Length: 574
Image (cartoon, rainbow, N blue to C red):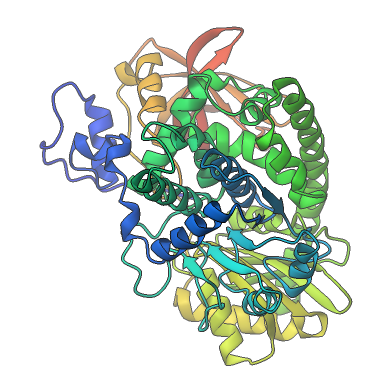
């Protein structure tokens, strides 16, 4: 693992004197040149009129509202899909729709998206209009099935389209070819939010909604959670959506379900950050879709009774603990498969890693792929058995490999090898036949080698450089916590430096707790290295080099500065 310091052209402009110089340095390293660029007011959002297809979708919904037609939202079984589904129901009801329901395919029975089979189930609910959220752009057959049954279809999605588009009354997707919307990074929940604000604008024009009614801003907590959970890039538009949602969570105006998800994870909503949503709320919401049915998560987000929401969140927490046990076992097996793959090939780890185990859970392979990707720093696809002779895979990628396009390239070069696929630059899903696994493994490795060149990327941690002893404290830690939201594409600040080891001990059996001394300073600071032990360290370690985040540690109501270690190298005296 290498520590690489970010390039920062310190031109001295764009930031007033009241901006901390460390924060100004961090902003410049993320291509922010003015304090105005981190103004998270809603007025700075891109206008909905730039989003293609949104006018046609509003036409359909406006007519449906006049006729009070029945609407059925077709969701997805991850956190983005769950929040988008809850947002659609809450938002449409705020705008006056009386009959709005939802249906989410169970991943183990129906698979992903608007399939003909799920259309058949939907038909039993007799809707006039189907609205997909976070899916639908690849549902060619499902769209035809809906049309054959007389249902009008509005697709809201953000996934990349294939060569053909489904037949629909309207498609709203910023990633359609030629779409003029400036941000291509909207999550599925973000696309649905834009449709709601466009519909509200129309209804205000016609007088169907009073000017100050239907306050959709109250739903931005859902938008924030789904956006962060889907790990889409936090460009300025998404940072505004997330910051506004976090503001509502912190001020106690979030839906009871989000408060409950944070509470069962022992996180204080009043101090919530994007990381809290990503690493505590989202996994508990996702657990239902991974192991059972995401409907429990959606019901939690739709619930207005805090006590009932807390009970559902507790059940989601139980499922998440179960998921962690399954994931831990699968990750250990994945490492063994990886070692066998190296031995069998007679060479190093493949550039494109493909793993499979007959006993793996199909709902957890995405997490396993992510864990192995972090270990080997290469694109990874993990497969589990699906139905009959099929395998279902989940892919995670690294810089330099657009994973959805890489799978598409494999499918184009080897017709019939991939039966179904879809996804983003960094994550994708696919299905293949079991007998095709060896051929797919070779084809994917070849494609990864073509994209990565002569050598795969090393593990790299990007650092914002060192901090002076006077900056390592609670004041800057609080400032950085509130200066985000940080996330994909706008990474949380990481610093590096060498420290004296004053004390070290293992806590919780697998975490390393350190008391560190700052160079040329009497100051001491606490640090924690999660999932790290010191049993393998050589004797005589008195210094360490670390890459770390400066964090606010809260314990029994008292806040203190703490270094959260991202990478650690023990140093010995020469």
